[in-house]
Structures are given as C-alpha cells and as structure tokens.
Length: 495
Image 1: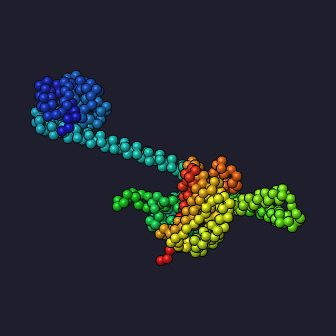
Image 2 (image 1 turned 135 degrees about the horizontal axis):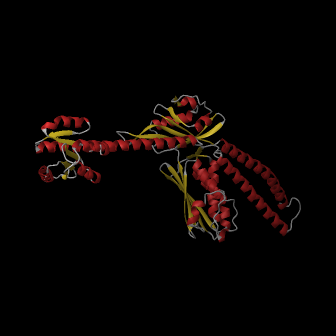
Image 3 (image 1 turned 45 degrees about the horizontal axis):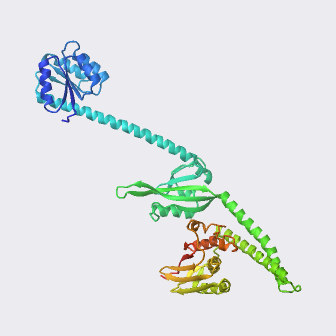
C-alpha cells in the first residue's frame, strides 16, 4: 500500500483506536483517529483522507449522522461502517445510503486491511476517472474553440480554399472559393474535383500530390482560367499521422488567389511600354540617320566643333535606343515571352564572335581580352539570347576595368552542364552591393566608373535569360581585384 494512503478511524473505544493506530502505522499507513463523530468531521475539514472506518454507536454524534454529512460534504471518501452483530441491519441500511462496506466486531485485522485497501484504491481510481473526464471535457472545449476559430478564419479568408480527400473529392471549401468559381451555394459536397474545376493541369497536379510524386513539404504554384477569372492556385499535400510512417498524404489543400486584375495591369504596362518605345524609337532612328548624313559630309563640310557636337549627340541617341531596347527586353521577360525559340546552340562559336566584336573596344581601353573553350556540348537555347547575355557580361567587364587589365572568357563542359566564366581585373563590387546587382536599374557606383553610361538593366536581363534557360548565375568579387560571373547552363544529353 502506498505510504501516502491516509485512514481515519472513528470509534469511541480508546483501546481499539490505539491498537488500530499502532498496527496500521507500523505497516506504512497515515492513521488519524477520532473518538466521536464531531471530532471526525473536524479532522475531515482540515485533512484529506483516502478512506474512513466509522463506528455506528458513539456519543455526541453517531455514525449514521456522520455518514449523512460525509456523503454531502465529502462524497468521494469511501466510508466503511464498523458494527456489532446487533446492528448489522443498520449497517446494511447505511450501505444503501452510500457507505462503501461494513465490518462486524470483533474484526480481523487482515479483513480490515483488505477492505480499507480496496476502498482507498476505489477512491483513487475514481479520482483518476474524474481527472480524465475533466481533461476530456477541457480537450473537447479546446477542440471546439479551435474548430470555431479555424472556421471563422476559413470563412473570412479573401482567397479561395479547397481540401480534397484521397479520392480527389472536395470535402471542404470556403465561401471565397464559391465566389471565385461562381458555384451555387446549393452545391452538395463531397463532390469530385473535376465537377467544379475544369483545368486539366491543376487536376493532374493534385493527382501527382496524392500519388506521392511531389515532396511532402513542396508547394506547387500554377495559373488557371476559371470563367472570366485568372487564378493562381497553390497546392500542397494534406498530411496525417500513419502507423507505418510518421506522416502520410491523405488529401490535398489548394489556395486560390484572383490575379485577374494584376494580369490586366501587367498587360497594360506591356502595351504602354511597347507604345512608348515605338513612339520614341522611330524619331530617334530618324534623328540618328540625319546626324549620320551630316557627319559623313553629305550635307556640306563641317567644322571640327560642329563634328564633335554632332558625334556627341549621336552617342546620346544610341544610349536612348539602348535604353528603349532594354526596356522592351525586360517587358518581354516579365511577360514570359523573351525566349522566342530554342535550338541546339554552339556556345563556342557565339563566344568567339562576341569576343571578336568587342575586341576593338577593349583595345581602346588597353584591356587584354581573351577566351578559351574546351569539351563543349551544345545547349538548347535561343542564340540571340545567348549573344545578348555574353555581350552584356563582357561589355560590363570592359567598362568596369578603367585602368586596363585583362578580361577572360572561359567555357568548359561539366557533366550535364556547360560552365561559362567572365572574369575581369577591374574595380570589383563591394560585398554589401553584390546582392543588389541583378536588380532592375541598379548600378554599382565607383569613382573610376562615373563616365560609364548604362541603363542598369543589363544584369537583370542576363539573369532573366539564364533562368529562362533553366540555368544558374553566380558572382564573386573583390574590391580593386576584379569580378567573376559564373553561369551554368544544362547541355543537350543524348539518351
């Protein structure tokens, strides 16, 4: 028996109380004794006990009255009635009123210990049961509270949301989804997802998630057309614990965002840029042609100062035309229309041509420009994109090497990739500016390169080209030591 088990023995015979106290204390019980009912109630009011042995016939307050009060105030304490042979009928009546058991005098100690142990265990089991019941009630309350809160959040979401089961049936949805898909509120669920979403690509994505063909923590984003709306659908697996695995896929969760307005604005932006570029480029090209005619002397001889001013104006026109072309390239890139065609492309030949084109410019700045290629395989790419990519990188390397130096272009095969490096010994890029160099309109500032003109779009275009061809671009730079751009492009593999 646990040492913490507390027994209250109530009897008006002092000898019996002392004997009981001595025998049970020696066996590890905490024993309290009382000579009448009033003393017993006083003890109960101050000390919690696990069971009480109660004599029926006592002065001041008898056992029956104590039992009645105990049942009301301390209903969880088992009461064992102690009775003589002449009061057995009364003991039975006491059990009907709530007593746990009764023992007749003279009693056997082993019998008392057995009944007391059983009563104490009963009380502890009842306490555990009540504790579990209270915890269960609290858990149910917490669960209902969380369910209510989630339902409120779910219904108030501006984005649509659906949850499907393993059978690809929609089992949960919110009002925003109903509005986006223009489904009647009378629709009955669960319903096959194909009945409410007609986009085959999204359905195929959900099937792949259910079949475990995507990573369990992967989010798959795609655009779909639903009626007059363009929606961005972001899908992920719904996970639940499994006996064989930690988590298993039991369905899918998809969030729908209406991006129709953004698409319209994006189209308006593209149309505006195209319109402005066209309206600006035409007169600029005409002005450049007029300047060229005058500079060539076809409109009469020019003085040295006039020739210089016209040449400067022509260079400004070229800069504006470059800006317009860059803006058009960025607009096409944002619209996903920049890569026009992909064909097997020999990067060695393109590198050779671009280097030859830019070599005179490098010599003007006393820069040694060289290249090397080895083990090259063709890449599936748009040749014009590749030409622009290399032209931008090599031109930048020349421009940012104002004190001469070297610019080296290397290309080599690396397994399934082609690596291209453009390395210079120029001014370098401060570490805090490296993360910004691919941002649109951002230019590295350096006292030695103030005269370098540019739009700040070149590297943004380079990165867009690389990513559109499923490649990667990295940069390493040390101030006053130089910069290296490294590009990895997937090569064409033969099965």
